[in-house]
Length: 366
Image (cartoon, rainbow, N blue to C red; front, top):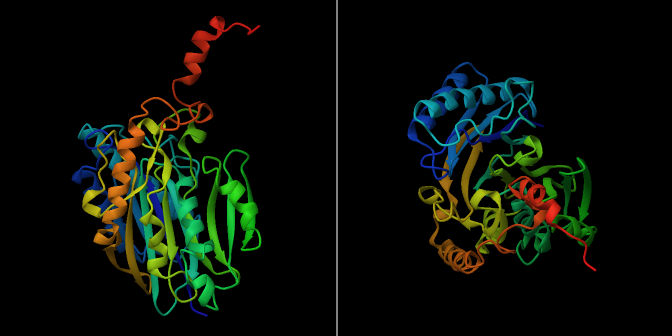
């Protein structure tokens, strides 16, 4: 058995250009400099600095395991340095995802989104890193279900002996701060009751039945951390592919249907998750619609060979067209549900102050 490597993706919004639509090149340059410097010091095996919308993602490999203090400290300090540049350039919402005043050992619960897995690299190790903007962690529930539990999406569940027994899903309750493991296909219907409510129940990990980790997501929700609306969560996801795991095409296939997710303008609206190429990752229409990019890598001794822009394929043009049609339709609802989120999801916006102002004008119904 070979030596384990750790794949870490840590992202944050530390300043938008213009508004919430993009990241200024100066911020990306500073992040790149920090990554290059720490790689020279030996903390990392390799890295890829990336982005989606107004979020910067640090994609890293190392041998220090998950939740490592030094890796997390490096990410936090990098985002602090990038925030300084954002303030110098007058970027919008500079440092908005840095909810704590100082690093405290782990960036979880401090604002940045984190997804990490530790595994032994196979002879050929294809990995896809998904970055989403203007949405929340529950946005990954639908595609992960399709990839690892739906035989109409993933033929390997039927015809690959290494996948035929199914997968285990760790589902986290973000409100009660609990987790449960579902074994599929046995627990499929039970699991769907929960993951169909993506604002609360989120798939955190997927494992093959032999324990091999297959996928991981970030599950941080900024509003639950801060107690108020401070921006959407803009989650990340990593999925290992092939050789007893879903093929690359099976992992990408769920995004051919731009499913509805929560987020978009002011984090308060439903909209289609549109798969886009790197060059089109800047949401502007009503600050959206929400979008996702896919970075394809072959790992080789922890080195990133890539990325390939997996959604640049014109085969996803139809999905983009559908997303824009859905955008036209749902935008016409304006402030009405189901475009606007339900009231229980609006508690971190202006809703509490409006209710307080009007409380004495409510009278009993006879």
